[in-house]
Length: 327
Image (cartoon, rainbow, N blue to C red; front, top):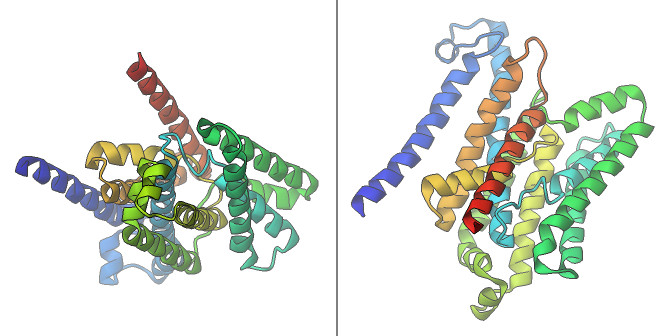
């Protein structure tokens, strides 16, 4: 038992070291190269200092926070729905946030606060429709209803872009495919606050979340107000996804992959899954954003394209693994 605990603790230490090492290496990668040691010693030029403070550092923090937020949302949704394939992207939450953000960008382009508010309204509305419609069908149709709502929200977004002028449509289309090309310290601050509150909610409500992860009946027998806690956790997911979509565009499948990886690495204990998912998601998106910046210079690839490629392969691996288990 002590050897197992030592192995688990070493995995946590390895994840922490990988995050710290990535944060030290990635500032110097790409063009222009910004060695972290020169920046800390003050040997970098004034232009490089400005690039570091206004572009590179907030972009790294935004990638870290967005990856952690999406992975945490995926872990929460998989626990609450008891479905290993649950993901904010497949449930239509990301598509709903994209629809709301697109409406805000076209109708109120100069109102900065309107973008996150409209994204949250869109994601919350789609999530509510998914829960209401799936409650009228069989219990195993939740994921299918989510996929249907995702297609519906995406089609409405495409219709809005088709009606918009070419310049606005191209700008919004590239943003919807996922990009960290326009980082800001305000986005970092808002995402930090929302992610911290969600983690605190998971910590304080871990007993209720554990009961909901078993079954609605067990949670009710333990005195848990299932509708209240379920709605609270899902609202936190909707808020996090809305903020990520507002600042980073549509980044899919992070919430699908990271909880499975976290369970393999850190076990199935509740807090280990949640924190492990957040850490793995942060590390994954840091390096995926680096790949998006450097794979095809001088152009920058859409971040959502790379995550969708990885996620689709991972989705197939899960399906094949489940098929072998049933056989």
